View (tube, rainbow, N blue to C red):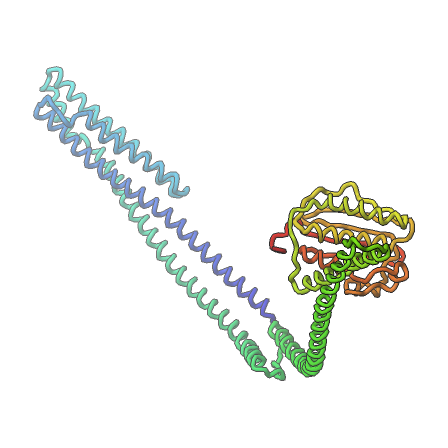
Length: 531
């Protein structure tokens, strides 16, 4: 039998015992409450009957004493008699009605007899009261002899004998009823005690039996499972639990054995993988060390190259530019060719100075030391100005440049000169590598504190194999030289350095023969990016 069935049977037995105990308790409480009310009413009736007997005797005695002595002032006269006796009779009638409401049909007849007896007592009481009133009236009319004779006759005939007999019978009946109700209540309590004891004993026996059966059935499989988990925790994956039967513990044992087998296989596979991984890691670690060493040397060589070229070129260029300007200011030069040569020298010197400045800016940006002159910049006005300058260059190739009309007018933090240089680089590249009668779209958008500059051309595009190296210095795409032999490969590296120095990023999307789109995203606020 499955443990689910055993537990269900045990639960049903316990529920049945609980319900029977609840029903027994409810019945006992109901019966006890019924007898408690009966006993209270019966005791109150007996007490009232005794009070009625005592009051009637006291009051009739006081009345007759008054009549015999002839006293005109009677504190215990008719008014007091009615008040006391009527109160007792009214209370007895009310108690009889309450008792009639709670007794059954069998006892109802006896209770109705009590009600009839109360009516008889009231009538007899009124009769005695009328007789005494008659004697009192005779005495009041000045006929004391006749009143005295009448009183003697009443006393000799037993004035309140019948009333006392009725009251005595009522007292005796109530006493018997009180004794009977108390005996029945005692018998009920005894019966309830016996039934409760038997029920508790049965419940205890059934509970102990169920606990014994369930614990006996659970102990062996639980011990086997505990041994198995202990062995498994100690690393003994070869241990297997003995499985018997088809209950839940048998299924759990089979699942445990299957899990142990899987763990054993996984452990073996993991060990093999660990051994293989250690070998691979050692090889890759050595390769990585060599690669890092090589990259370090390359980086040192690159930095040294840029530092050297910047240092070596800057001094002679400054000298050339200075000598050319001195020659141009000379007044005794008569040969026009010298002047033209000096103009060329100055022009080339300026060009080389810009080149060196760009190289220095790229190197400083790579080292995180780029210097910017940050101030508020009206980016929309700057874009419009640079687009206007670029249109002059684009006219030579019959290339159109359009700026979207919905460009947001926004002021951002930035270096105006470097931002102008960024826009000139992007537009110069777009014009240089566009086909005749091509089109360049310039857009400006803003979202979540970021301003995006978009420059899209319909030029030759960039091959996919060159996309990873377009931001490297002095590198040009394979088809760039065919489209335009000018350029040193510094445009996009400088553009990226400018954008990164402003805390932004630059992205390029291109397709050969379709054109190139450059997106430069700049933050509106440079706080925390560049001091």
